[in-house]
Image 1 (tube, one colour):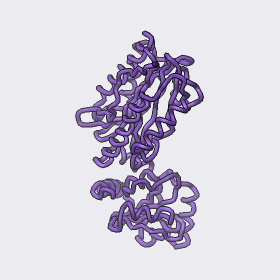
Image 2 (spheres, rainbow, N blue to C red):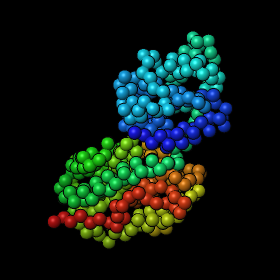
Image 3 (cartoon, rainbow, N blue to C red):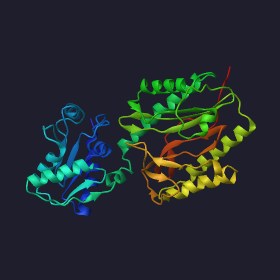
Image 4 (cartoon, rainbow, N blue to C red):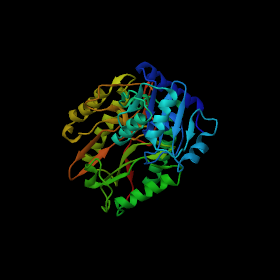
Length: 375
């Protein structure tokens, strides 16, 4: 069952925004926002099948028969939300709620499809009502930046599974294995040890493939002397983990050790510097400076980090253009890298929470370079 206190707190935060903006009601269809507002775990999938209607004193939710029983099982009949599976499409259902509540200013998300929006206007016209439809521009996503204790507990559990998978895969990898073989073992371990799914398609990139930050696992067979970039995460009750570790098959060369140490220095310097209220681009630029000062500035081009939660990429961001603050309670990655085309790549990533005292990573997997015995 969902934590009713946590859900009530989230709804209250959203209603405070509605009151501030002068909204009589809001229509929400984004699945991540709906998961956050209802607390219904492991219900939302790739379908855009649900519509919520929220006022200052009412919570309505429209779904269909594919999901209705699951919502009831997850939330129970005592939920503050009024669920239905009426045989009516979402726009017509929302128009009925507008008429029922006599709402005149009804906010809609800017991510709402044009088809839904057009049908909503048509349905309202048939009922003889003409409400105003101001747009919400990622407002719920911004509210989701600050995680509550229930969310943090789920994120930590997702990370626990991810850390265990790292320990397992380090004992599994052997020279001659393909990236795809390693990926299958890594993902299978997570799925059979508590994960509900995968945060994203895992990256396993050996040797020269590691120089491509988002390389897809291939038939390449890892060999002695290869760095192997492992970027992956477990999904737990809809919350994501995201971690990258770079391991090496056999003892590293002096150059390999040197480059790895630069990436580690950039990571740990940024993690130690990040404090509540820091500006996202400042921490990113610090990573760039550390790597550039050590002669590899041309080989780190992506952002330093991104928010993580119900989505794998959320706000806030450690990026070159992000001028927002990183508040207490936000969850964000730190993931510098160096990528030498045709040779190798290295990335070191943790996900952590911003506390009153600073950045606190969830991961327990080591930052030290893991050397895999080649036998």
